[in-house]
Amino acid sequence: PAPLTTVCIWSKEMLPCPCTFSSTDCLCLPAHTPQKEYADQLWFEKAEGTFCVDLRATLPCHSLICPASLQLPMCATGDMAEAWFCLDNVGDLATFFTWEAPSPFQVLPNTGLLEPGQACRIKVIFQPLMAIIYDVQATCWFGEGSKQKSSIQLRAVAKCAQLLVSIKQKRPEDQEAEGFQKVLHFGSVSVGCTTERQIKLYNPSVVSASFRIEMTPDTLAKDQAFSCPTAQGIVLPGEKKCVSVFFHPETLDVRTMDYLSIVPSGCASQTLLKVVGFCKGPAVSLQSYCIDFSWVNHGERSEQTLWIENKSECTARFQFAIDCQESVFSIRPAFGTLAGKARITLHCAFQPTHPIIYFRRVACLIHHQDPLFLDMMGTCHSDSTKPAVLRPQHLAWYRTHLVRGLALYPPDILGIMLREKKLEQDKNGALMIPIEVQRTPLGPLGAGSRPQVHGELSGTQALCNIWMHVVS
Image: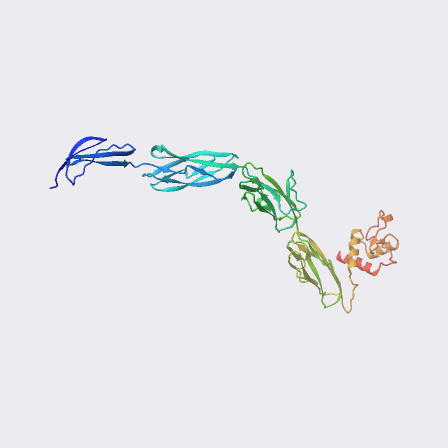
């Protein structure tokens, strides 16, 4: 059996106590458990002498540490800056924490749980509303009943940002004089086309200037002709930023006006920009508005060409209203698309079927433009029938007579009135009423007794009136 040993044990925490035990025994000593660090000596006295053992012990506790201070970047009022630091759990227990930070600072995450030896990154957000120097303390509460704390000093400077707005590549009609409202003119833009202009934002301050761009709210948003893809952004200190504004008109011959607001963050004043544009349509024209095929033998075909041109930048769509296959006149192509600043050649043909006079006014319909009219005329001759040839001058006379109220009088009556000086001829050969008899009635058309015709109009004038009755 192991030899027995008798010793006397004492310390500052216990009275002397004689104990007898062998080399394999274990002795448990009583200890108090206040939350503090323990330091003591344990004395052993036996026959051979006395010796001591130093005792040190620390109970498990909560402990979180963070930097003493944090400097945040300089920030513009109304803007936001952020910075990071580490919060470490150097204790022996899992610790729940809660942050308290005064305005305008915000600590994220505001609460959390850290295991022993674990650390987390804490973000501090700075959103100042006043341009002053900030030096405040943020407190982290933790431990039993959240009675322990760890603090960090937060320092930051807020300044007012400034944003200067100007027009890039200024035109004479633009306006940006000091003290007046800024006006951005797009000029005349073809319908369906898009034009871009730019405004320039300059930040002369030492802090970044954030901004947003707002268009005037419109109940018919789909009809808005102006647009700005840049809804918001940031201009760094001393830098310039260009913002595009687009004009896409859809309503022809309309002057469009809208307002665009550049709103900086914080206390800087906003800039109201007036945008103006005019919508223009295509400018389609014909090389000639009259085609005279003169006379063609029966059974033959005559063809002439003319071009159709678009002088505008926008695309034009056209169609000639001559889709009847029985017509002696034809146009190829009868419809199509004209690119901006382009022209195409039209092939016009005349293939008569009877020996008579032919005339047709063909309408050219153009999208976003008033229609054009092309007069096509020709005369067909056969071996036995050769009618007088219709000329453009006859058409001009007829239209003049129509305006002057003479188109419904037959040629013989007009001939008598011309002989009796009740009618005159102007410099173009058309008939006109002399000034001294303009107030005298010419008499009812188709009276019971028609005067005998002793004089005749010229052959072309008679043809004009005869053809006029046929057309009527």
